[in-house]
Length: 241
Image (spheres, rainbow, N blue to C red):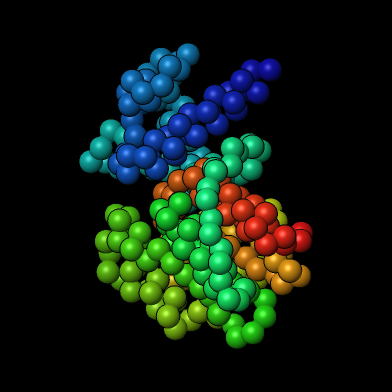
């Protein structure tokens, strides 16, 4: 029982650290957690838990700050915990008057970008290998992409090595929400990013939608946004799957 309680406490603290870091974009301290959340633990207990999470490689301590930030393994652990949860879908309005399926997907990708605040991607299973994307402006709002080398690598992937993204998006055509963190993506240009992908069918044509952002992306918002757009597409077009 004690082991279960300890594990539950560690997961609770890790979840709060990750979600606070996503929101604040700065190291999170035990004092911050005490102030922001009504936790049944003292600041010392929270600090001890955070130290334990650091020893296990889920958090990293920045020496110029009293706070900690999630590591790549910390984000992966958080995503694994998210998979056990149910999310409330966002309600959206979509006007999909278009001449062909590609235009429909492009509109959906544009709506997804605006809904989530991240770079949105879409791909279709017929015709030329093409990845449609919208929301590049949101990349510049993320402090992680202030590094010009990272920015250059991302745009090189979008403009030149687009076949990598096409293959990646079509590796996950099931309707589950698939979340790839860091090296799980398998593309060195975005190995410090996260990708949220889901597939679906429209009139027997396979397609997929994805959101790309820093590892510090708001996964809950990304998941609910993709689910909402995917559901609306099916309602309006009568897709299968």
